[in-house]
Amino acid sequence: MRLTRQTNYAVRILMYCAANDGQLSRIGDIAKAYSVSELFLFKILQPLTKAGLIESVRGRNGGIRLGRTADKISLLDVVKVTEEGFAMAECFESDAIECPLVDSCGFNAALRKALGAFFDVLSTYSIDDLVKARPSINFLLGLDEQHSAA
Image 1: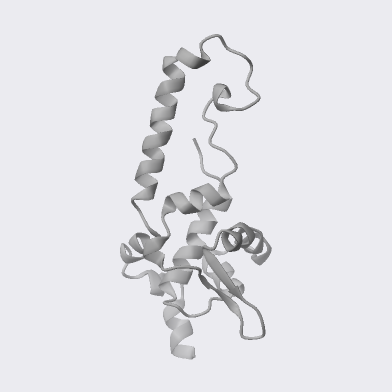
Image 2: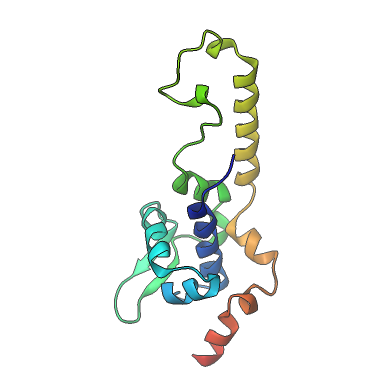
């Protein structure tokens, strides 16, 4: 299984907002910090905002911030919002080809157990955990410079 680029950058956006300590974050600053296009980030924001993980403030001095505290946003929350599906094999898909073993297949059961373990691990990590694991995150994201310029 491979997570999409959308999930990767969704986590990065949330980490940036968490490191920015409640201040409004601008998409341009986030795009610059990660060397990615603003348009790409705007597309990712839509599902994050809809799910309440990000809050958007409009206006000249607007920006984005976390929709709830960083310790209340798990990696599983992010993955469920940004990934379309978790079909690890053809038999996981709703339109799968009929297989006589689907209901009693050991492979199917093993993959379901592996996916469950994957979800369990993601649910134990929060955005706050990721930010706290990197004491120099504000420096690495250029947030120290922004706060001293303000």
